[in-house]
Length: 279
Image 1 (cartoon, one colour):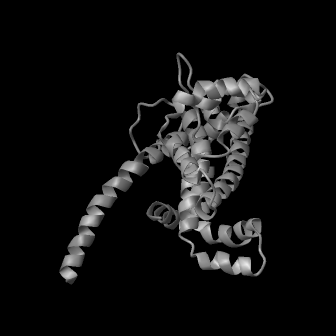
Image 2 (image 1 turned 135 degrees about the vertical axis):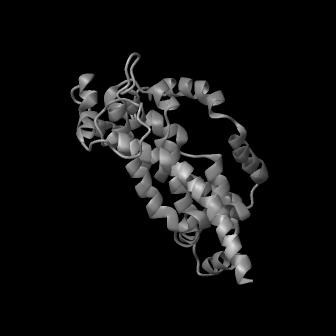
Image 3 (image 1 turned 60 degrees about the vertical axis):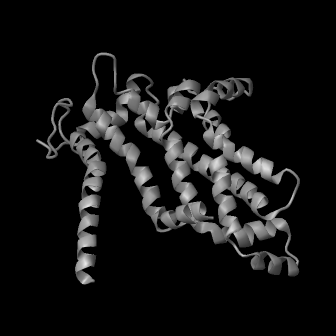
């Protein structure tokens, strides 16, 4: 039996180690290129030839070439503000919708659920132009609100919270009603604290998705002081020359907040994802 376990463990390592290497080596290459003199992209070495942090200071101040009031830090703050706002508001809206669909009985409940679910099947690029027209008509063009308002709710979030609330026994809700609690109290003080793994999972998904946006900000943002960091990284790549050292340094800076969010939420991440999919 022990021998079988050893072989099973060996097979796991054989499968997992190459997968981890395949995932981490590009990130290691970017880190190495960011801390050595900017000599181009020709080097495939994972050991720096010389160590310097000039790329970081140059990347931080590079946007001043176009707008003297803007640095990479300005764009980083824009991305943080958008990601935090979208995450908080969408989790609030998605959880309220998920609670209503899981716990309340009303006409059209199933239709609303399937409508919310059907939005997952629609590619973003097919609705980008109608969204662009709506944003212009609402006066949100070239403002951070255009990066926030259209994404304050999602069918995926509603689905995840509905499944999480369905997994909670009815006894908790019935006991609260006997004590005189209303619907909002039950949702806010009883149900929501019981779906922390789902909240952590949604935080990771929402922050990752919001942080990785490039196409939509490219459509609706023109002012450099309102650009998220992904558009700022694109500034390092020109028609004739690409500042690879600066680009790698900017990518490392842009990756740090994502890693922090993931490390903070990893304790509940897998539990919330598996619970939502099973329910």
